[in-house]
Amino acid sequence: MKTHEKQHRCFCTFVPPHILEHMAKSSDEVVHESVREAARLSMIQDMQLRASRAGQAMDIASLLPPQQGIMAPPPATAGREVFNCMNQWGQPPPYMLARGEGDPVTPDDDINGVYEAGGAVRDYYRNKLGRNSIDNLGLNQVHNVHFGDHYMNAFWDGSQMTYGDGDGMVFVSFARDPDVIAHELTHGVTQHTAGLVYYGQSGALNESMSDVFGTVIQQAIDGKTADDADWLIGNDIMGPDLYGEALRSMKAPGTAYDNYMFGKDPQPDHMIHYYHGADDNQGVHINSGIPNKVFYLVAMDIGTDKAALIWYSTLQRLWPTAIFGDFAYMVAESARLLTKSKQVPVGTTQTVRAALKEVGL
Image 1 (tube, rainbow, N blue to C red):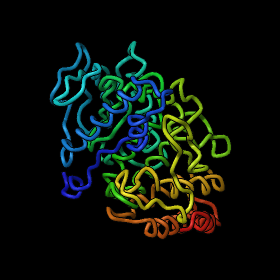
Image 2 (image 1 turned 120 degrees about the vertical axis):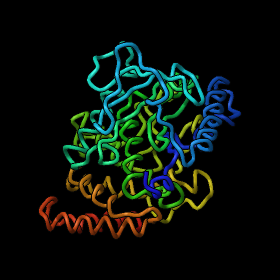
Image 3 (image 1 turned 90 degrees about the vertical axis):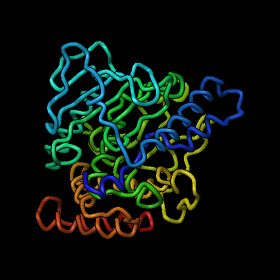
Image 4 (image 1 turned 135 degrees about the horizontal axis):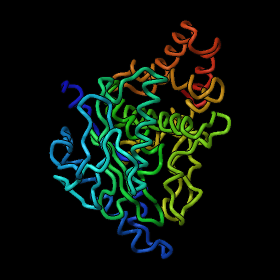
């Protein structure tokens, strides 16, 4: 592995830490004790994994036996490997390979869900953007489902994906929502391209890129366009207690949720409201609302796939410590070059600049 890839690995979770913290510390009698406990345990697990996996990642496929008759795909073939964690915590994991590339449907909907969504992510990057898997060298996808007991999150740890089942009331399984899977796998793409450091503005750009391609690929799976997409992130993992809420809104950052479980969505939609605090690695899940809004505005003008092409080109032009100003320059430059090559419509550069101006960039 290249040195810069080791340096810029990140432990990237789908649910922001401030949401779990709000649930864990809630004194509201409406918040059931089991929800508080699940949030607390999920927070602890995230902190432990973040500490233990910093700068390193495990090759699960080399540690564990497959189920009888199930084989892992050959290395570097962009194949899928889905492991069953059997609701266990910790490492080394007692996971078992449950479905490999080309294997038939299993009785487990979570295993099938990540398998199918992982294929959709791989196919979009390959067919629309010309990328050969996460590292552009055919890296196999490793997915781990049923992690922990009521674990309220999903994460990319530098080499693989892991999904909790949720508690069933606030969150349902993270493995059945394609935008979760596309979001987290895109952290891997970012790791192998710009390597955006998971802190401050570079971290917010990292999170935003994952939200962007999460919604892009969700729209492709659902057959939606920019005009009829909901532009919500995480709405399909909401359980019965919070059905109708979401974790983030790309169309209107700051409006995704407002309830006794999560608190109020803190995402800004303009640099005037930029979050300057220390929480969430200096706001990586919070300030991502600003570049998210830029993508939404551009996609509404030129279409989601054309906008995705600009953002993918931009991702390859950024560097680990890039900040919002760097992003603004590079996304406009990417639009200009793609206009010149006739891959996006004339006038796109002006569309991008207008969108940047609308959020204060």
